[in-house]
Structures are given as C-alpha cells and as structure tokens.
Length: 257
Image 1 (cartoon, rainbow, N blue to C red):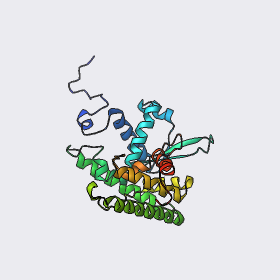
Image 2 (image 1 turned 60 degrees about the vertical axis):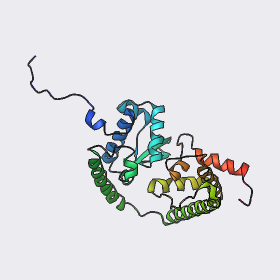
Image 3 (image 1 turned 135 degrees about the horizontal axis):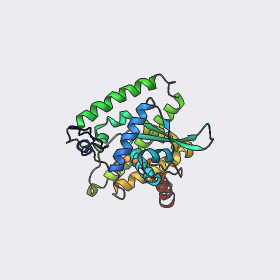
Image 4 (image 1 turned 90 degrees about the horizontal axis):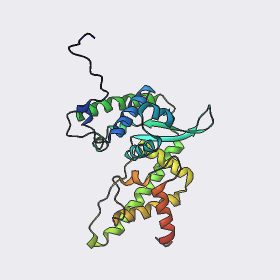
C-alpha cells in the first residue's frame, strides 16, 4: 500500500468543538441533527419517524423521548402530533426555533459562553433565525383569533402571578418577590393554544395559581417558570405539571382563593 504523508482524518467527531457543548454526547448528536434537518427542510416543521432517527444517529426511542422533552422545555423545538396523510396514523412533526437559539440564556445552557466558539454559534443562529423569519413571512398571516386567545391567556397568567406575588409579599418574614412579566415566545404560545384546546381558562388560572404558590414556597424550583408549567408529554398527551397543580387546587383551595 502506498504511504500517504498527510492522510485525511476519518474520525466523525471534532473533539475541540465537542468540548464547547454543555450537553451529553447523545444530546449533542441529536441537537446537531435537528439543526441540520431544519435547515434542509427550509426552516419549516418536518416529520421523521423515531425508527428512522434511530437508524441515522443510533439513539434509541426511549432516549429520544427524554432528549426531545429536554429540548422542548428549553423552547428550542416545538413538537406537534399530527395525522400522517399517507398512513393516517399520528406522527410527530419537529420545528426548530432559531429565534430561541439566539437567546443567550438558552444558548448558554447548550454552548459554554467561555468557549471560543460561543460567538460563532451566536452569529450562526442569528443568520438562520433571519432566514427562518423570511420563510415565515411568506406564509399566511397568523390567525387573528389565535393571537387574541394567546394574549388573553398571557394577560391572565401575568395577573395571577402578580396577585400571588402581592399576597406572598404581605408576610415580611418570607422576603420580597420582584414583579416580572412572564416569558413569551412562539413555542410557548403554541403550547398555550394546545393547552387551551383541552382545558378552559378557569382551569388554566386555577392550576397556575397553585403552581405559583408552590414556586414561591420553594416546593417547586424550576429553571424556567413558564416552560416548566407547560411541560408536555406528546406520546401520552398529558400536561404533567399543569395536571398536578390543577388536581392540587381542586383538593386544597377554597372557592375564595
């Protein structure tokens, strides 16, 4: 065999780049795969079966579910379960939100801000966020009724938070909670709409009220207040945190609140 002085490196992983990620190895692979596929499908939502994903990136179905749930809570992907036009079965569609990836709080939980590549990632995702917005502008305008519905829900949740904050702050021994405006993004709006398809506004209000009280009393310590509340299992179609506190409200709160 002829000797080659400088052979091409056949390894699949760039270890230097890999060290910039704050994710587990399989999460890195899945994350990169999602970004590449989103760009390939023109920044739109796309369907991929779990078997096909496993064949391409060697991540088992159960592990896929956990990683997807984690990415969904970060707000970087949105999962929609829809009917497949060919098989008529229910399948997952993935949507990567490049605008969310531009959020430094989100990106810094994926890529180390101390790494030399962090600035490169910021610029990379800003570029693709801009391209994604161009594509979305060409689509039909957002349903006005849906926008109003989301506005109403956000106003309700912000009002509930402020009421419970004021109530909590009356006890000077507990320490004061600062006023905030709840985080809002397209993936969170879509989750709120999906939640409102299944539950009425009164149920949403009651569950969020009990949840905020639990957070203030340190019974819950979420990394992100609204994302954690909207945690959703797309396979079972269950809202875990929401359901927990809706039930807690029914069992433990009086009508006067």
